[in-house]
Length: 147
Image (cartoon, rainbow, N blue to C red; front, side):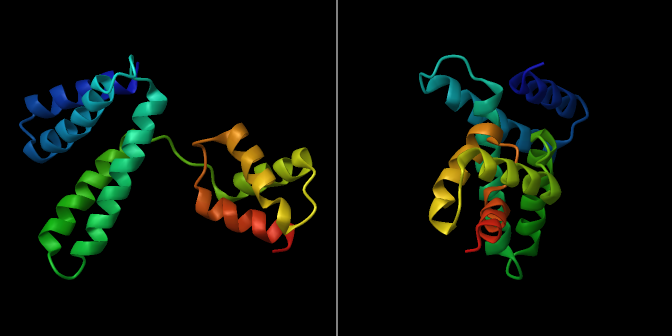
């Protein structure tokens, strides 16, 4: 089942359960998917949906940071939306797995020092795009290359 269909089904269930907070959050996600569809890119793929969900996740994280200590009620609402968004996102690889991928990317690209960072990151992204967080991967690459 596609991610669009999964979100639509979850929305229907939330509407039947009369869970207004969940309905509002799911409508926001569904609206983003509809925007993707109307953007002229044709059929909306799961990869496009995941990218949209990651964008929504980042927005919620920024809002939570902005509301922290000032508007705890709004921060709590954003946290609830963030949890819902994360429930539709695939789980990212742990640090051990990413470390193994970095070692493979270094070997595959023939990297020998910090100047080859771009080659390693490019190889890593081609092989495992969307399966890891780039921030920690960047740190692992720098450590491995001696930067």
